[in-house]
Amino acid sequence: MLRPIERPEVWARWSELAPIIAPAVAQDRDVMIGTVLDKIMLGCAAMIEVSADNVSGLLVIEIVERPGGQMICWASYIAGIVDLPPRKWLRAMRGFMAELERLARDAGCYAICIGGRDYSRIFPDFTPVGDVPNRLQKVLLDG
Image (cartoon, rainbow, N blue to C red; front, side, top):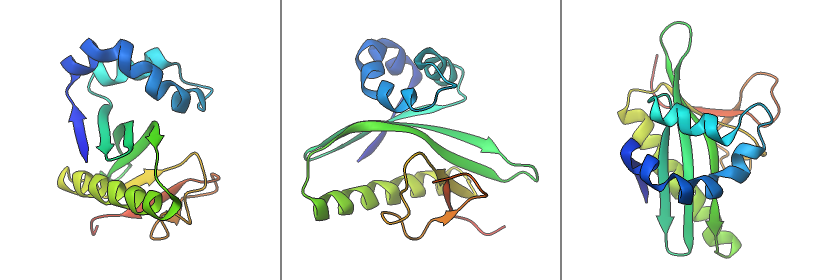
């Protein structure tokens, strides 16, 4: 289940949320954890709570506009714990991604982009984007 966390709740719970998302943010050498909070508070990013049986985590997304007006949902940071055997883990990840795709589509996003690790085997319906290693996208809407 994905649950968007409203900005006042992010602010109130930041001391609890920051340590969870910090390992993912640390992978991006150009961004500090405080910058993520700033983006969320300014409405430039959103935090989503990820939960299910034996799963808990956080996802930070950003919606950006490409030249030409296409809105793209970036899954910028994700971190948490998934305590499931391999096949159930894969099913859970694909289920969470399908839910995120629905949210992005409902928000009018043309595509969703992910990166960081090589997720191509986990999400085979995503395609490479440019020449950036491990950057993948899935087109959600025509146009």
